[in-house]
Amino acid sequence: YTDAGVIAILTACRNLTRFSCMFRLRVPPRVSHASFEALARSCNKLKSFAVCGAASNFSDADAVAIARGCPHVESINLTRCGSVTDATVAIIAQAYPKLRKMSLQAMATITTASVLSLAACPELTELRLPGATGITYSTVRALAKCPQMKYIDLSETNISSVADLGSCLNL
Image (cartoon, rainbow, N blue to C red):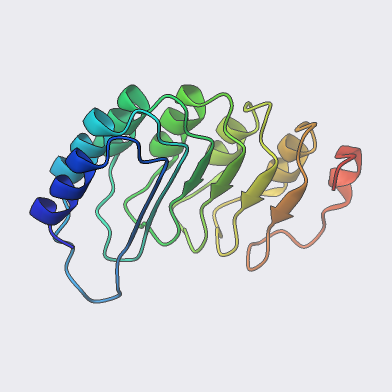
């Protein structure tokens, strides 16, 4: 991917509802903030986006741009985006109260603060956190308050008991 290519596609496809950009390990990203700004400017019907890969440079500024320009997003996948922080997740949770699905797989940078932000999204039905080693048991207690939750993946985390999830009636 290059900025020029991604921007050309996004500018031409204004009715886009899904965007996915997967980065290969050890391949330097050639997609910058300019591409995410173009996504925000051009694709206000966006419902789902995925930016995945260890080489991704997705940032807080990108999250803000997309939140500002794409108000209808319900599903986000930021798997292996090492630059994503608790602040990024807080921006997303605040911008998208109707967020239904979130994937933060293989993200050691994610802590309980991220989960507490996401737990405030009343429509959240699916949360994938495998490999998020920075989360704690208070994460489980926060998720237990999500009435619509149907799927939670806490594999490869420091959580060994999910007994507190008993109040999630849909699980």
